[in-house]
Structures are given as structure tokens and as C-alpha cells.
Image (tube, rainbow, N blue to C red; front, side, top):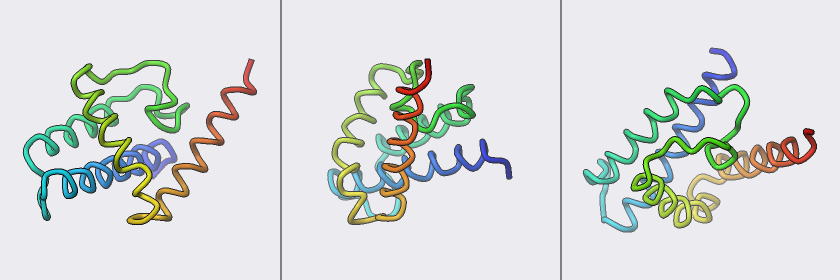
Length: 113
């Protein structure tokens, strides 16, 4: 598998884990996601699958083009605000990797002309 596909797979994995954590804590879902969270997870995966910038970006938050519909963007922001800090407790390796890659990408963007 090439690095772009690895990035795509990791991004989808992290987003799904965050949505699962959010759904479990807010909607009491165990195992399967509630319909609204499942729709968000499916939408996020589809956006990732069709992202033309995957080779040059790390995460959607660092992208200049926001391809999410406004309603889905608000939902994913709520998920990220809630689940982001909690990922350190539930999935520490993924959380640290995400922080490290985000900081590296922001530094790269600041250093580029």
C-alpha cells in the first residue's frame, strides 16, 4: 500500500474512532453507531476517499479547501471538540501521532513561501 493510501486509511480510522467515542458518550450507542453518527461517519469516509489533496495534506483541519457541507462541518466540529482531548485516554498512540503530524504539517506550511 502506498503512503497516500496509508494516510487515507489512518485519517478514516481516527475520524471513525472519534465519532464512535462521541456517539457512545452523547447517544449511549454501544457497538453500532446511532443513525445520525453513522451518516456522519459515512460522509467523512466518502470525503476522504475522494480527496484530491491527500498527497499534500495531513488532516482536513489543515486543508485550504473545505469540502464538507455546512451541516456536516458543524457536526464534525462538535465531534472533534468533544472527542479530540479524550483520544489521549482512549487511543493514546493515535492521539499522539495525530498531534505530532498536525504540528509537523503546520510548521511545514509556515516555512513554505
